[in-house]
Picture 1 (spheres, rainbow, N blue to C red):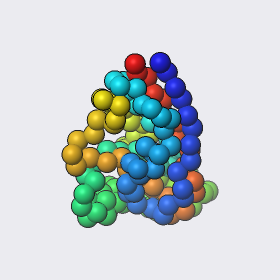
Picture 2 (spheres, rainbow, N blue to C red; picture 1 turned 135 degrees about the vertical axis):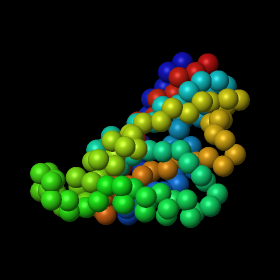
Picture 3 (cartoon, rainbow, N blue to C red; picture 1 turned 90 degrees about the vertical axis):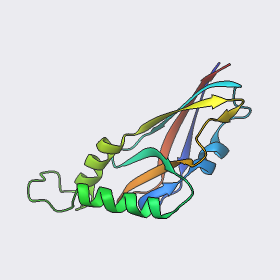
Picture 4 (cartoon, rainbow, N blue to C red; picture 1 turned 30 degrees about the horizontal axis):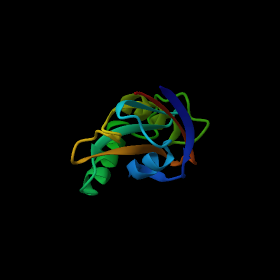
Length: 138
């Protein structure tokens, strides 16, 4: 069985945002007993990641780390038309990635105890984000 749905995540400010429950709510039911879920965000200035879902300090720390790794306004950037945050957002998206694969076991996403799915928003005002979810399973 293969199913595919496309859904929208609400606009968020720059940062790392826990969106696990939003994603689960957007998936068709029931999920297969066993399989995989692939998530793909259709944008070049944000990303998806799996990380700590309990302590919100992790999300703020991740944002600080990425902002220090890829700084705004570097003099060597040629792509500057869309604002100071745009080119760094593209670079951060490449570093982070735009897709995830999560196992499905017993009809549920098989995430670790402290794992959650993040929307990594790298623009100050990125807008709503489109995500394609592909479910393969039995």
